[in-house]
Amino acid sequence: MSAAKKVILPSLVKKYLMAGSGIILVLFVLGHMLGNLQFFGPPEMINAYAYHLHHLPGAPVTLWLIRLFLLACVVVHIAMAVLLVKENREARPQNYAKQGFRETDYAARTMPMSGLIILAFIIFHILQYTARVVPEHYNETIGQAPIEVSHVHLEYFDVYAMMAKGFSSPVVSIFYIIAVGLLCMHLTHGVTSMFQSLGFRNEVWRGRLKCLASAYGLFIFIGFASIPASVLFFGHGKAYLAEKEAEWAKAPVEVSVNDAQAANTQFVTLNEGR
Image 1 (cartoon, rainbow, N blue to C red):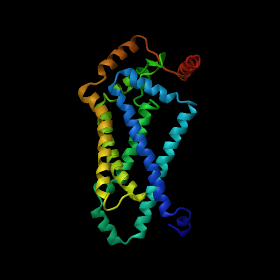
Image 2 (image 1 turned 180 degrees about the vertical axis):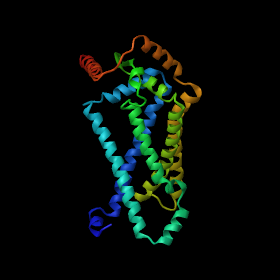
Image 3 (image 1 turned 90 degrees about the vertical axis):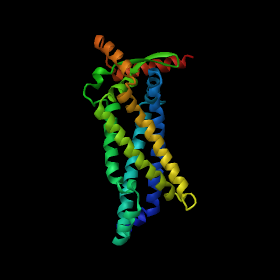
Image 4 (image 1 turned 90 degrees about the horizontal axis):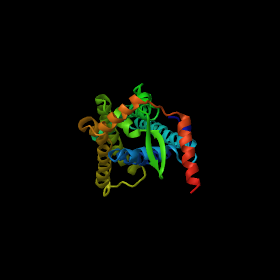
């Protein structure tokens, strides 16, 4: 790396950018997992939760701003990681590098490969549940779900049925569980490194922070993995899905953008009149 680039973006700035974007992503993963765990409640619970997410104040602009912000955090996090790895390799002698390889843990050594798998998983996850194009017949089988939002009867995507159907596929569920496992390994090492980058880790707190990071990674893994495991191995949600699919076969419906906007208008109008 040239001296000019080092002046523009010093190592300390790279570390802070990587740590800061990492904190945001760590908190997002936690919130996303807690939201998804509503799948274990009644169908109306997660359907209403999904409805509120898609109808935040200022939606859909607000929702897209949040998505773009998270995407920017991912890009910054990856870019700073690449720059720091390159900088460290250029700054240290070869014999030190070999010693460092022996001393670093498995998660640290497999960061690049696990990161690529996690990126592929994120893309697949977005295609499956956000764009709803994987599998191709998703929009044909997933119709509208009646939900109660502040005592207002609305119709929107049946997220509960979408999750039950998506995780009924052994390939999807197993890939999901493996990817989440790699994600949690990544998070565990990342959280530990984040404390070090911010200057919070010393000899006294090293072991404690490592245990805290490991506990966080395990908690996230159990939370995410329990959802596909419950569907694939215990049939959670399949009875509801079968009932809904029978209804859709008799009178199939599709949710359009106009339907969602009309439902949102109804929701806002009724609440303004209170």
